[in-house]
Length: 404
Ligand SMILES: *Cc1c(COP(=O)(O)O)cnc(C)c1O
Figure (cartoon, rainbow, N blue to C red):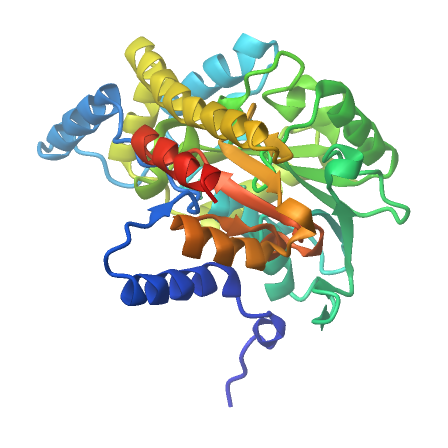
């Protein structure tokens, strides 16, 4: 008789977005005359840049002729794209990454979920609290997180590092040494980012403790401050302890188009074994490449027009972020994030529970956000608004919050 992977049964239901969906649907049904504005979803809304669309059209035409048709892509991804990454994302910041240290994929969510394949079940992971749920759930599915403790909203075998206003959203080094450390910077959901010195401390700590850092830099393009590193490899010694994941979703609007990459330096060793070669083996076996058309689209993000056009999209979202920050601060809210990331993380007024504030905002202002407690127990009392809406809706939502 076949058996299932029982680790899946231990997973708590992912109630966050389904609960939000249900509450919003029921509100709309009871209030058909009300227009609800969502600043809740973590998805882009601007269309793909013209340079990207042109590259896609051209690649589609190439696929129509035998001479220029493309079948399976090379295991690591097309060299034209990896070269553009080496040049623009790394060399331009003084970091040397070799072409065979880059693995093109269909996105950072799959990569951050799949990376568990190459690590032993005995590893203990450390995550921030609040956290992007993929890191924990993918480890739970592989049986690496112990048991779920519902009353604590935590797994028994995971090290949680609270990130709150009290520590400026910079995780403290844990008392118990983890083997694998997940860092998302700039952060989803808090919208905050680590400065170079803070990240360097983590790199030193990982090297001293022979731990590996899985660094999710999906929001790298939103960094506006000088002392926030764009890549973990800007830190000394990071090549012996870090894996970096990037995505085209948030910097160029590829959420529905799918493209990302992972960088694993050859210096990253576990004893005699190269982690790069393990991932190459895994990638070659279980993944057959991102589509040619999409890799050409990704290449166009690095063209002069592509850079200018995507920079404009990011500026559009970050202008929303600035409006949200400014308006909420003027209303007396404590607000965080929104400077190096398209998320604003705010303290709920008068210590209100995250879900109570959600209900208040929905019912009285007809605005949807995301309760902080949905990202982990340390998110209780916080609330996330995104800058991914249209500028008109963002302004309208702020007016309504003001009149609460
Ligand atoms: C949006 C997001 C990603 C990007 O995922 P893709 O699969 O590339 O679309 C990765 N990490 C975090 C934290 C995100 O919020």
